[in-house]
Amino acid sequence: MPMSFVKALIPGCILTFVVCLILGSNGARGAWLDIHHASIQSFDFYWSWPLFVASTGISWAIFWMME
Image (cartoon, rainbow, N blue to C red; front, side):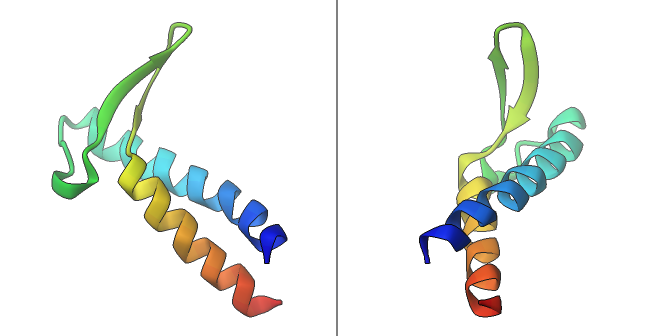
Protein backbone atom coordinates (compact mmCIF):
# COMPACT_ATOMS: atom_id res chain seq x y z
CA MET A 1 0.00 0.00 0.00
CA PRO A 2 2.72 2.62 0.74
CA MET A 3 4.32 2.15 -2.69
CA SER A 4 1.02 2.91 -4.43
CA PHE A 5 0.87 6.17 -2.47
CA VAL A 6 4.37 7.15 -3.58
CA LYS A 7 3.44 6.41 -7.20
CA ALA A 8 0.25 8.47 -6.80
CA LEU A 9 2.16 11.61 -5.85
CA ILE A 10 3.41 12.13 -9.41
CA PRO A 11 0.05 12.22 -11.21
CA GLY A 12 -1.40 14.17 -8.27
CA CYS A 13 1.25 16.88 -8.67
CA ILE A 14 0.93 16.99 -12.45
CA LEU A 15 -2.88 17.23 -12.40
CA THR A 16 -2.79 19.94 -9.73
CA PHE A 17 -0.14 21.95 -11.56
CA VAL A 18 -1.96 21.82 -14.91
CA VAL A 19 -5.42 22.65 -13.52
CA CYS A 20 -4.06 25.48 -11.35
CA LEU A 21 -2.02 26.85 -14.24
CA ILE A 22 -5.08 27.01 -16.48
CA LEU A 23 -7.49 28.42 -13.87
CA GLY A 24 -5.00 30.63 -12.04
CA SER A 25 -3.61 32.32 -15.14
CA ASN A 26 -7.16 33.32 -16.07
CA GLY A 27 -7.69 34.95 -12.70
CA ALA A 28 -10.08 32.35 -11.28
CA ARG A 29 -9.85 31.42 -7.60
CA GLY A 30 -11.49 28.02 -8.12
CA ALA A 31 -14.01 28.41 -5.26
CA TRP A 32 -13.36 25.44 -2.94
CA LEU A 33 -10.08 24.73 -4.75
CA ASP A 34 -8.60 27.89 -3.21
CA ILE A 35 -6.03 28.42 -5.97
CA HIS A 36 -3.35 30.84 -4.84
CA HIS A 37 -0.23 32.34 -6.36
CA ALA A 38 2.97 30.93 -4.87
CA SER A 39 6.60 31.88 -5.32
CA ILE A 40 9.63 29.79 -4.43
CA GLN A 41 13.03 31.37 -5.14
CA SER A 42 11.68 33.59 -7.94
CA PHE A 43 9.74 30.71 -9.54
CA ASP A 44 6.09 31.78 -9.67
CA PHE A 45 3.27 29.28 -10.01
CA TYR A 46 -0.31 28.63 -8.95
CA TRP A 47 -1.13 25.90 -6.41
CA SER A 48 -4.09 24.39 -4.59
CA TRP A 49 -3.66 22.09 -1.59
CA PRO A 50 -7.27 20.82 -1.62
CA LEU A 51 -6.94 19.88 -5.29
CA PHE A 52 -3.57 18.19 -4.62
CA VAL A 53 -5.04 16.08 -1.81
CA ALA A 54 -8.08 15.10 -3.90
CA SER A 55 -6.11 14.23 -7.03
CA THR A 56 -3.49 12.28 -5.07
CA GLY A 57 -6.26 10.38 -3.26
CA ILE A 58 -7.94 9.44 -6.53
CA SER A 59 -4.61 8.40 -8.06
CA TRP A 60 -3.78 6.40 -4.95
CA ALA A 61 -7.10 4.52 -5.16
CA ILE A 62 -6.54 3.74 -8.84
CA PHE A 63 -2.98 2.48 -8.26
CA TRP A 64 -4.12 0.48 -5.23
CA MET A 65 -6.84 -1.23 -7.25
CA MET A 66 -4.36 -2.11 -10.01
CA GLU A 67 -2.10 -4.06 -7.63
